[in-house]
Image (cartoon, rainbow, N blue to C red; front, side, top):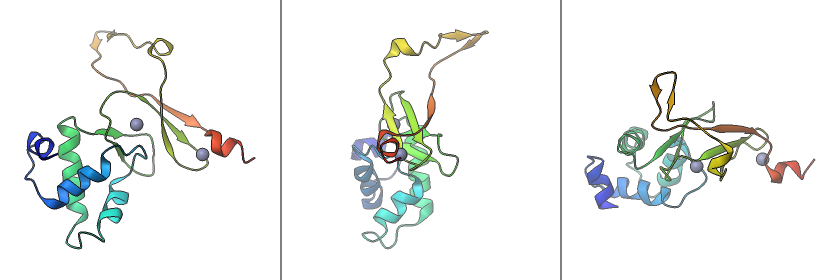
Amino acid sequence: MIDILRKAGLKVTPQRLAILSFLEGNTSHPSAEEIYRALKPRFPSLSPATVYNTLDALIYAGVLQEVNIDPARRRVDPNPEPHTHFLCTRCGRVYDLNLPAYEISIPDEVMGFTVHRYALNLYGVCPACASTT
Ligand SMILES: [Zn+2]
Ligand SMILES: [Zn+2]
């Protein structure tokens, strides 16, 4: 994790290490506010700006993926690989969906624009919410 911070050009601090370990293996796509609230009790001196700056640098370094699916808040995903996200419009949870590649076919070039990566957002109702109606 120290290497990850150095790679992102960040000074290694206990707070930044705590942000990274909070995100490691985390599939809930937390927002900066959620990360801040989760770590604040352990790090009373933690500021929201530190969380925002650290996330920005990690996104820029390609360590984190920014998830722009939720109009209410910007979320992050420790899995930087392209994958499909699903926002449940009832419970507000964001899920990872493993859509087989052959089901979405994005060309490498569209009208002269070279595509390097893409993000696909799906909206609907998750199985847990669908079963409670
Ligand atoms: Zn749901
Ligand atoms: Zn994800």
